[in-house]
Image (cartoon, rainbow, N blue to C red; front, side, top):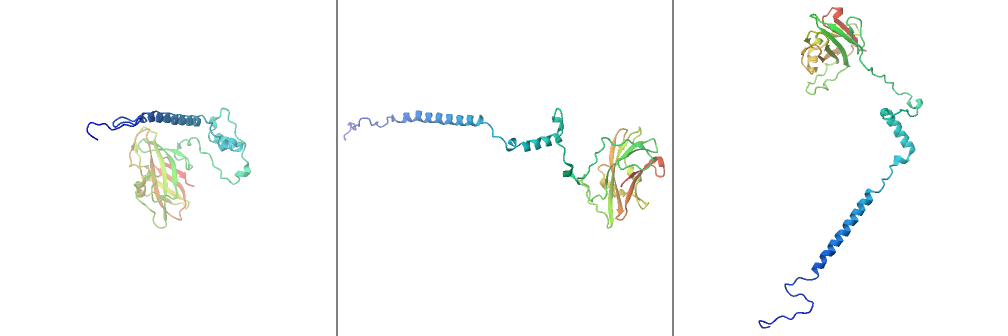
Amino acid sequence: MTRGERTPVTPGEPQQGEPSKAAPRRRPMVLVAGVVAAAAGITAVATYIHRAPEAEPYESDPAAVAEFEARLWESSPWLYATPVPPAAIDPATTAGAPTVNPRPTSPPPAVPAGGGVLPSDGAVVLPGDSGEEMTLRVIRIANPVGPFDPRNPHAPYLPPRLGYRHIEVVVEIRNTGAVPFLSDVEKYSRIVGKDGRSYPHDPELSATRQLQNPARLDPGSWTEREIVFELKGEVDPARFRLSTHPGEAGQTQEWQLT
């Protein structure tokens, strides 16, 4: 082909550099397909949203519903405007079950010292030698107590000597008078065994169990003190004794331990 001559063009065939006429037609088709897919997705979501939830198995079981309502009433009777207890439990099904005595709604009131042996949860008002007045209550007795203090992870490991055991008595002390005093009331405490002998507390063991050092108790304040005893295995403790002035009946009190 000589210079200046043109290449023959077949009718309908795009020339070099001219865009194809079929390409623009593909774009509307893609858009239409996308719209159709989106519509199908929306229809599926709407169908799922408006679909009624399937009934749970227990909703169609009258026995399960009755059992659920009975348990709900027992645990939360205040939910019912007019509480009506469920059917009474057959005593035959609870034969041999342990009887649990309800805890008192409030602790017994404190009594003056020297009035006799108190129960383990009794409270007493003990006077001091300089006008002090304190109310003491035994709040916990552990017989025996383990070598670790569960309330103080930093306390040392203190196992009892061979043939001995540790007994812990925790007392609550409140300053109910007008004169401050130190909280170390355990220095005149003892355990009286059924053998009639008295056993003093162990100062070292008691000190390691304290969560706080002895401190001044101002009027209206309170604290707790842990008192630890080390007794031989055959000793049977009967009473716990605490005094602000040993030998004075009006300043000494005993509590039952058994």
